[in-house]
Image (cartoon, rainbow, N blue to C red):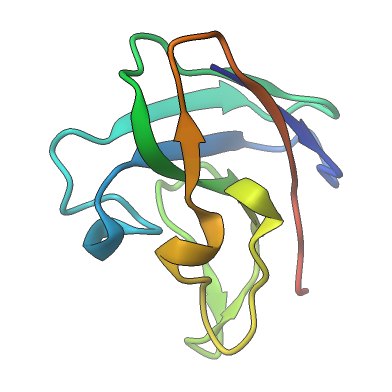
Length: 121
């Protein structure tokens, strides 16, 4: 599975991606020991590859970790300071999107998708 990431505002840091089947672990994947995680350098058009993905229902969350500190930095404890993106271009309203808004089906064929990075600050 290959993900093309667009709209990255800078080449600082890295892009962190996680792919999970568990709705209770979305979007950060911390509680899912089977989640697939990939970290790539931030480039204007980053490519992320997940390998060995079995068929099933999944959701992807991205973080443009500009300072490469391994977490999503926030202003005033709430507003994301760094970029984020989700499969199916799931929208952020009053918090991260729900799993059902980002979930997609992955079959046996190689799959490609594009995820747009979004920034609030």
